[in-house]
Image (cartoon, rainbow, N blue to C red; front, side, top):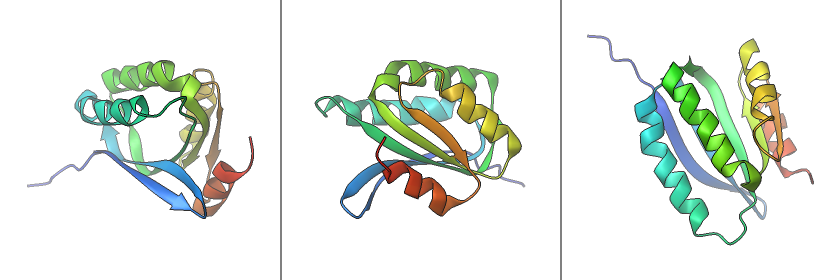
Length: 128
């Protein structure tokens, strides 16, 4: 039996004295994946007064979204877009560059795609 692994893992990492949110997306994301992760992110941001969040997305194993999951991602961007300063999307698929451009329409911060993981993390820490 072949098990298809997919989903989003979340973490908080620190580089030097700065913290950032890390999302690792794997496989083809589903609505159920967003039902699990969205409340965790909502709860974390709710406890911070005037949150400003930098996010590193590791999309190196991301294959895409189901239609309903894409809608969930869009709603998340609308809800938290004003709290996000930067999103660095790391991955090696050409469509991820387009996804970064489209994502930038829905958040107040900057979104950029990178083929190199270290460049992505460095960019997250440069002043906006």
